[in-house]
Image 1: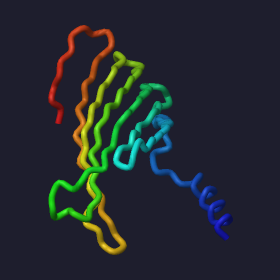
Image 2: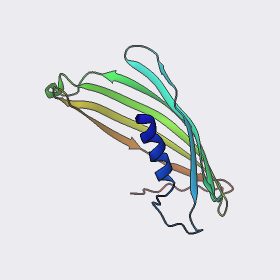
Image 3: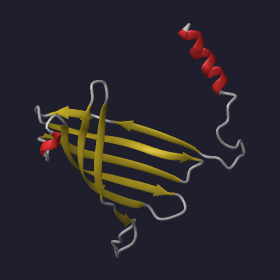
Image 4: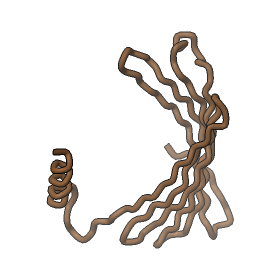
Length: 149
């Protein structure tokens, strides 16, 4: 029964359009690899490696992210039964543009993750992440740092 439903779903998927069918549309291809290594009970090293592109070609983005996660104690006493984690890491992006200069982007980040409240069958997870972006254009000698909101 499930096999028939899946086959029907994929056949009907070919007749459904979520966007215009004109020639000005693009397709995106994303490929990611996300390894994780538990160093101890409290520390985990994780990251990702990937590539993204648009067809017809207008840009290609290659990236690498390395981060560490620390299972910490709750910061406030009202969260005693909650699970908390501290995150920190760095992402490096290389963006190859067809019409403009290529760029290298550095993104250091910090984060705090908490799972609270704990109900009998339901748990909410909140993640506060602060990420800075430093963009360097290849071929330009002067760099400027701006605050972009």
